[in-house]
Length: 232
Length: 165
Image (tube, rainbow over all chains, first blue to last red; front, side, top):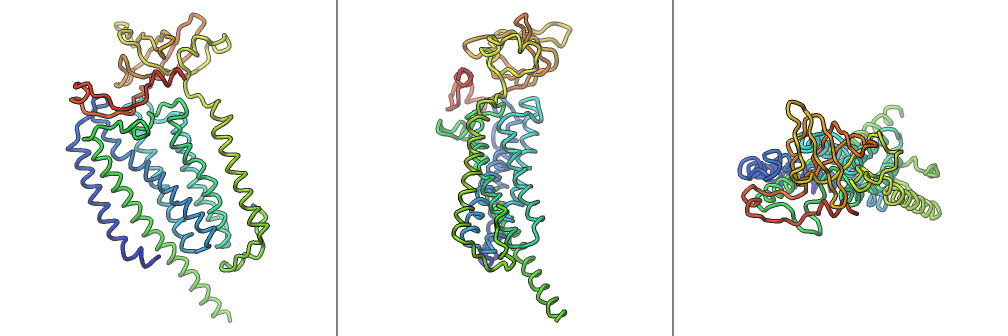
């Protein structure tokens, strides 16, 4: 697993950077302003990728946690741990860019509607996950408790996604849903490039972080063994 | 989850007994089920971000003067600017009922006739809504100006229909 990450992480990073560069060119230069919102709509090209990547990040965290509980492989735990940390970055990114988009369009930075609240809960769950991990001494127990927290927290994922369809919110409904795609082609291309770029960037970041956590654990184990030898 | 076995000190040896494994799975299902129930059932019905004009019109006097939000479409041709003040009068509709809104402040750029808006304020016994804050509710379709002029319709949720639900 670690060997695989070491071999391919560079490709993910490089292709992500290329996709984001193309997406930024299309989004900021080549695409037209929106008929209703004007130039402000360009914030969508970072906000939506941030948001969808953070949802995917939580999905990966859930799958990794289930996998860990099943196989008890410490590397999978490192992967889950890494995903949560990177997920905090993307989730806060989505909240910040959404706030910046909300002021000129909605006329408010923040409002207590279902989408905003459920998404903030997602961020709080991720932060809680990382905090829980620091509280527990025993490595195996830490991993197990954290995995359970992540799986229980996954209940929030469908709530975030469908909140704009189920309840009255200030946030607009889903643009891409069963109804079809409500984004014109010229504005959809930059969004796709940016989203793919963000997914690749996310994969790269998780790869790097997983290695870091793995090496940290290895170092601690070695330290422990050396100390044991000294005392003996 | 307090029932974890004390034999977990060695990270490599994990021997959950069958009973504990089932206990863990069952407790997980119970917690998840509880959260889903909270999320979809009771909680969902009480989760009202804004009222619709129809609901406001049939309010009991208990609601008068209370700070609420109302969402709807701004009726075409209803926006009247009071000269030399920051005041603005318009009507809000959900297709079935309309309410008059008296607004004082600065409306957002996206506040336009025929578009969605959520206003914050209070409803009084004179059947008049007073507000100091307008939030624009934009739809989920995005297209360039030329397409809009050409009259292209992208598949989107009908705001008026959702308000009547």
